[in-house]
Image (cartoon, rainbow, N blue to C red; front, side, top):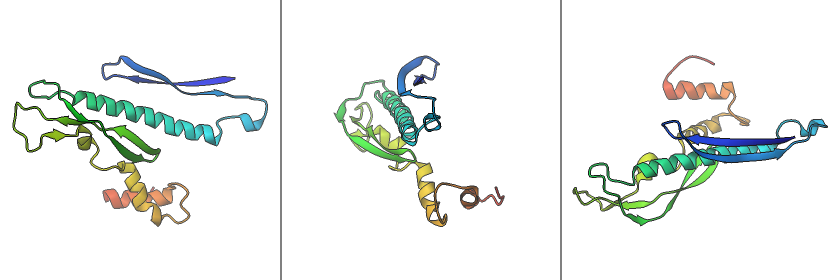
Length: 162
């Protein structure tokens, strides 16, 4: 049996923008070892899907900041750089161009990186929470309810148990 998982990314107006194959598997069904996904296949899925979604989100964000919102002038690129983002699903390298500011208004700096406004740190918020509370979870193999409960209480001030 062949299993093919496509990823369809749609624009905000509902048009299909990108269709890519995330993974194509050739699966046998004759013995128990071949049923379901292997660990390697699951890891590939958990890396590929966030990478593609994140890349598309960043490209869409950068495209919306390529023109100056006041006068509509297309901004010139000063340099093409990259930025890393650490998430629970891995570390990803993202494009982070530097643009010259439009001269129709005075600015304190002549260039800027739009991605800096979106990503003030290089670590995703859910990864920071995991790093902050992981030392308190003895025998940490993942977030169990007993491990996660103090995190909810500490972060939000809610005093309910899960």
